[in-house]
Image (cartoon, rainbow, N blue to C red; front, side, top):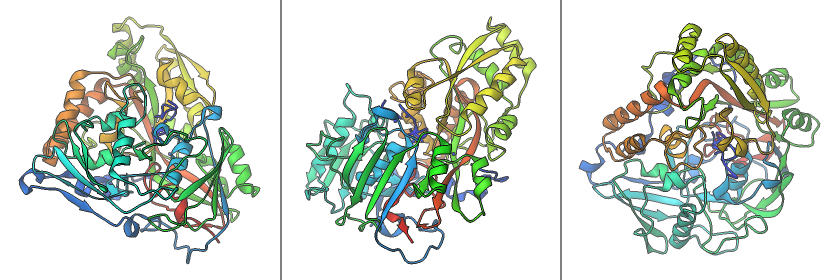
Length: 559
């Protein structure tokens, strides 16, 4: 979430699309070397590449899900034998009185954590951002990659009804409703849902509008949760197939869920999980140290340093989880002129922003999402501050002595600090930036459509998913208002290209354009920092925020 990953949304970016998030779409600390070699898993996405699939005839992925997708698959701390019982209280920043348990509206990290406790998707992203089977037991394509057969595992909803192909089709058709703004809508666009059909109680044939080599990414899309065919009362009695069952929910305050003893992947260790809303980082930390909660989501680097190794709490750093940046809305003045956007790229001193806003605990960005991920264009030159060139571009655009409001909020680590630092940097280029503080409860929803410049972040997701949910004309969490039909066409071309090398070339062409004139000024990447009580065990230490094993409370236990 991204971003956070939710209009309430969230982006996940997160998600958080945010519509509220937004991730939400949707993070770090100092790691001097985050080169691709240090994160080899992010460079390969296994079955998703579909290289040669057309000639091979079919692409199949099958898995039981439980053995290689649970927390601790190389990621937990060697915490010993799990113990059953107890209630874990987890503190997250929330979305105020407008919060909902409708999983298709999940955009904030709190939304996604609650949604994955109650519901399942057909697939989800592993720590390497490849799609892992969840409710889908396997998937298989035809030779031309425009029809995919998905076989469901045997799983049941909380009321005992089996999860069927009809539930899957209902869920996807609900997300695709043109009258709604569900986060996963753009990701599901390649599917012809009128032509798709159930071929059995636990099998679905998805008919696509065009060949799609990375179809498993669609199954793993943020917000693409499976709900019962007749589901409608999500805030009063949500019925999912997830590891926990609904007990109570007070928007903006708390949600309590209990163990689902019949969960298809095995019952959780905990008796109950309580999600507590605490928007202030200081409140989350104080509650953790004081014993009011056992898990505190999203701590600041300075807080982590103050507590790390001191014995009172545990600090978990999820590497490379968070993109940090500013959004320039490209559909309105002054950022409808690409020269102004280019000037702002050159105003930013990225190292100063990382050092000041993240206390040095991060890596500089280069105005593109997904550093180190598959398809990231490593060959582009690192952009540096150039105030003379920035002033010249502003003069060409007739924007000398420009004044612009920068929306920010204490809703995320480093946001207010980054706004103040950038304000001072812009002043050196003759630009007056008025920092405008927004509400922590409604910030992600407010900045999705309003204003011209805002602080933004995102959790981890494949670059393909970032594009589909945030940069296409029909994306519901398009915070930069980047809408270009030729860009949309390139995305469809990339989707339909079976050869990975050829597909990567299309993605690079798209990203070079974003690097030149896009609306995201991405100045840094940070780790996601979580604090836990010493009694909390089984927390995955390698899964980036937004991925399958992040916030996997069904795998956590209390010692």
